Length: 249
Image (cartoon, rainbow, N blue to C red; front, side):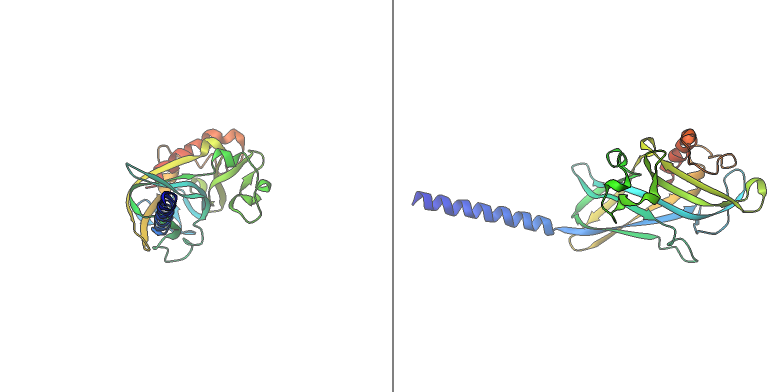
């Protein structure tokens, strides 16, 4: 009889645990991160002419893309991982006359709760950056050789490309400002009051000011550096990386 009662109690406890786990696993919502681009105090568009900070050289951009990694939601008492790594290409969204809604990036099945910070990295974490595209399954995020620098043994973390009229000339000089290598990995930690509710979609805006990408902590001297592709350009790349960190909010 005692054994029978023990067995019943054990089964009840097991069932309770299973119910709790199932309940918790279903207590999720979706997070929609709305990536918005601006240039100073105006909405940004690809292929639209802007004045470069301080020099006044006219330019337009034709591409903006980057890796996002190790995304988390945090509060004073908890932290949850919501995305390991992905690739964000904002080019198409901001090509055309009405990009005001931004780039909608949805992360599903996020644990419900109240959070105070959204954190993510721009770039590829060192453990993955130590590998090469051939080390990843075809079709996965890090399998693209087009986003890899073999000479740097690194993925290209961030790309800002376009044409500029240097020294007031015609807009015909190409620029390709790229970052990569482990020192270029940056962590963005944004104070955001985020309430994830079961079965609902929560929207949060993340804004990047491209004017600050060129002039954040320091002016990026595009007149002397239009391309970042060489290991000798690490100092220039670090200026760009520091600026990017100030541009996201």
